[in-house]
Amino acid sequence: MAKQRSVLVVGTGTIGEPLIGLLSVMREQAGIDEIIFHKNSPRLEDRPRINQLVQKGAKLAVDEEKVGQFKQLGILPTYSKLEALERAAVVIDCTPKGTGRKNKKELYEKFEKSALGFIAQGSEFGFGKMYVHGVNDEALAHGKDKYIQVVSCNTHNLAVLVHTLALAEGRDNLKAGRFVCMRRDSDISQESESVSSPEVGDHGDERFGTHHARDAFHLFQTLELDLNLFSSAIVLNTQYMHTIWFDLQLKRPTTLEKIRQRLEENPRIAVTHKHSANLIFSFGRDHGYYGRILSNTVVALPSLHLSQEGTELRGFCFTPQDGNSLLSSVAATLWFLSPGDYTERLSSLSPFFYKEI
Ligand SMILES: NC(=O)c1ccc[n+]([C@@H]2O[C@H](COP(=O)([O-])OP(=O)(O)OC[C@H]3O[C@@H](n4cnc5c(N)ncnc54)[C@H](OP(=O)(O)O)[C@@H]3O)[C@@H](O)[C@H]2O)c1
Image (cartoon, rainbow, N blue to C red; front, side, top):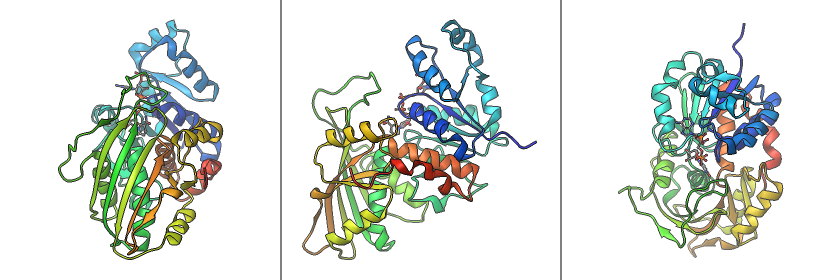
C-alpha cells in the first residue's frame, strides 16, 4: 500500500498556526491525505487555537509523556509525536531559535528513510538548502535535497528585489545591494516585550552586516551566484510591518518605466501608492489569508528613485512579515510531494497574491 501523504507541522506560533490552517483549507487540491500538527506546551489559553485547527480538519499530535496533561485540559490528541513522524511524508518545523536544527539531529534524521523531506524556518541557519519560492526553485534537486530552510521574511523581500530588479537583466547585473531592514518589534500574536523607541542593531557579521544579507547571499549561492550584499537592521516601536530601504547598484543602465514593468510582471510582487505601513497592514487584515499578504514584498512606487545615469535604484518597500514565508513553506511542501506539478497545485493560493495594495 502506498504511504499516506501526511504533512506534519511542528509548532503552532506566528508561522505554524496560519500554516496549519492554510494547508487544511487547500488539503484536497494539494493532494495531501492529512494534516497533523504538533503542540508542545499544554496550556489552557491555547485550547481555543487547538480546537479551531482541529475543526479545520487538522489532527493533533503531542509528546507521549504530555498526553495526560492535554487530556486534563479536555483536549484529545490523535497521535503521539513519534506516531506523527512515522506517518509524515513532509515535516515543516516552525519552532524558533535553533530548535529546528536540534530537532533535525535528535529526531528528523531518524525518519529520513520514511519521509520525503523536512522544512525549517528563518532562524534555522544551516538546516538545509535555503529557499524562496520563485527565486531559486531551479536549485532544488529531488531525491538529493531532503532538508530545506525557508529563509526569513525580510530575506525573502531583499532576495526578490535583487532577483527581479537586478538579475533579470543579467546574472552579472548587480554591482552591490545595500539594505536597511526596519523591523517591527514583536508580532501582534506575541506577548514578548516591545521596544519604546528605535533600537539599532549591531553589524555582527563582518562581511554582510546582519543575517538578512548573509542569508540572501547563501540563497543566491544555490544558483552559483556570488553577490555583493550588505544589510543593517533597526527595530522600530511599531507592531505592524517591517519596512526595507534598498539601494541596488546596477551594471547596466535602466529606466523607471522598465523597473515598474519588472515589478508588474512578477506575480509575487505587490506595489502600492500608499506611504504608510498601517494602511498596508490593514489591507492584509481585511483581504489577506488570516490577515496575511502572501506576496514577497510590497514596493512603495512613489518612493522609487533612479540615479541620473540609470544605474542606482533606491526605494522603500514593506515586508509581508510571515505571508511570504507561508507561501514558500507551502511551495516547498508541494515540491516534495508532487515535484512535477507543484506550481499548479499552488494556484489555489493565487487569490492572495495582490498586484496592488
Ligand atoms: N514571526 C514571524 O513573523 C516570522 C516570519 C518569518 C519567519 N519566521 C520564523 O518562523 C520560525 C518560528 O517563529 P514564530 O515567530 O512562529 O515563533 P513563535 O510564535 O514563538 O512560535 C514558536 C512555536 O514553536 C513551539 N516550540 C517551541 N519550542 C519547541 C520545542 N522544543 N518542540 C516543539 N515545539 C516547540 C512553540 O510551542 P509552545 O508555545 O506550545 O511551547 C510555538 O508553537 C522562526 O524560525 C522564525 O525565524 C517568523
